Length: 107
Image 1 (cartoon, rainbow, N blue to C red):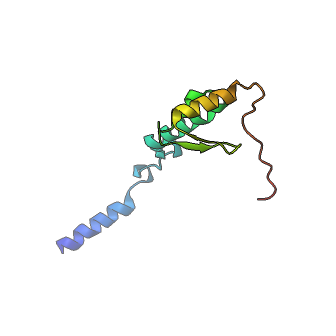
Image 2: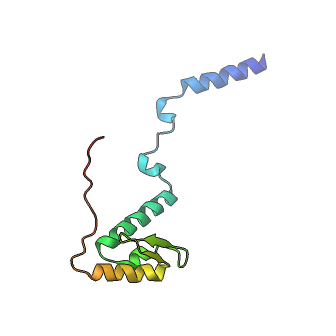
Image 3: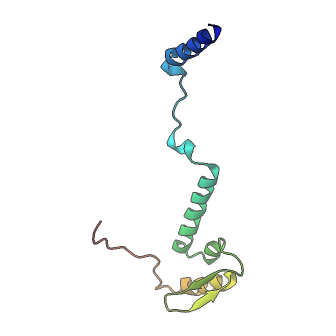
């Protein structure tokens, strides 16, 4: 009997609570973790480095020795210091334009 009374009180309390007592749904920005914010910020910095012709800023996110890249002309570059030198040379060319416009043919 006592058990039934306790169960009844619990159920009544669960259904009779005012809506204002319910936990609000968190805003979307508060759902994003600090780690995700850090990753997004790093990605923005990495993306802005070529636009500002910052070779060191690009290389900040690469490992010193275990990074490799094949350039558009087929040349393989290995190592962060070599990347910095290659980007610096590329950025020194005033005719260099960073980026491209994607032509969407269909969705």
